[in-house]
Image 1 (cartoon, rainbow, N blue to C red):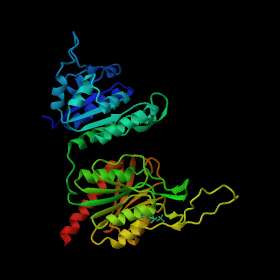
Image 2 (image 1 turned 180 degrees about the horizontal axis):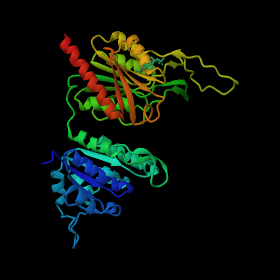
Image 3 (image 1 turned 90 degrees about the vertical axis):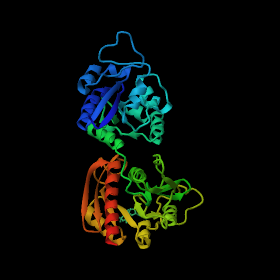
Length: 409
Ligand code: CTP
């Protein structure tokens, strides 16, 4: 008997054929796979393909059509049975249409009714044209689905079947299969009892009422850390600069704008925190006296007089006591050497070093590749992976350090 029962929803997109590979990848991971296809999906792949691969009949429509072929099965309550007998629901490819149906609770075919009847974890792997992906309607639906706790396996960027280049390509099959397995395995509750203070995103330092200086940062790494810490049982305080992504559910969000505001929020919550992670891209300089009025374009040159912002990480390092302190080092050269120097000078326990000169990782990207520089002298390389995976690996090390410190006492 396979260990897990997966319902694989296949919606109607060019990538529907890749769902066959996903079915196989899931079976290799000890899953029994029940495929549910939308009517549009049948235009791209024959149900028989999935029936032959999975050894299960494929469900294709809500109401039994007379003369339904042998490889289809349907009845008015079948969706309830499928929902009850599944451990996880994955939809790949998830089209913009199926995302909209799920987000709004429409139920006019087998897949959307099964979704509403299902109470377990849901994994959605979208694939569509770039403009459809970027459309505010799609993005709003994705926000709703994320807030509902569903896992969205972000599409990759590249040339699409429609000829456009951009986000919209179905994620790698192994990434989707691993996300399904991760959704099935409850996260270890190894951070229970910890209060974790995480900073994320950039800061904005005003130059006048309409202008500011900032750093490149999407906040994705810090938000992934917050989500993982919450899933592992911690209380999470997320101090965030301005970003365009929703806070993970269950975390306490404190929104700030400037480095000074971030410093005040961090130092204010330091006493109740046991672990501090500083992933924010704090601006190093600011204008101390911001003019009340907009600066007019009058002179041929403009020289800005900037002063350093408070170094929040260094201040945490001085006050940390037996708290665990994790800093980040974004570098373009001499990664490990600079990171180790930062570890020493800011009194950190770990510095997460990433090379921001690498294409496809770091700023704005969904993936990252980092080296964890530890006080023990170890350097642990974490190969390129989604930021959620990197976050998990960082916490694995934090938990390991915690255990070592406790047993040393
Ligand atoms: N940081 C901070 N307060 C600042 C600037 C940075 O707390 N005013 C933190 C960041 O959140 C990050 C770490 O310091 O955890 C590293 O930031 P980075 O800008 O890479 O290093 P700096 O110490 O500012 O040194 P440099 O820019 O010269 O590399």
